[in-house]
Length: 87
Image (cartoon, rainbow, N blue to C red; front, side, top):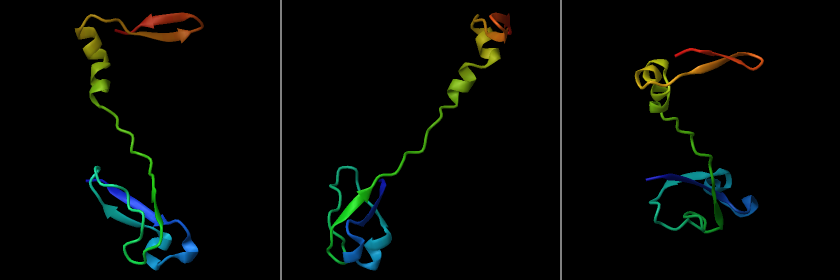
């Protein structure tokens, strides 16, 4: 289940829990919280950036050995308009 972060909509009318921010575990299907569970004031959900995921299989697929095994050529630019065949 994902962890969501909430904070008070108006920090001047809030308790110590929602003034800074607090985390809660909720199901994805649950609605977002709208009131603080302690003081009853309005709160908003804070969106966080997702951690980028890199698929390591892509590196293996494009390795020199794998390209050679499957009959592909790999060209590397050596200068202005010239390329050398590496694999």
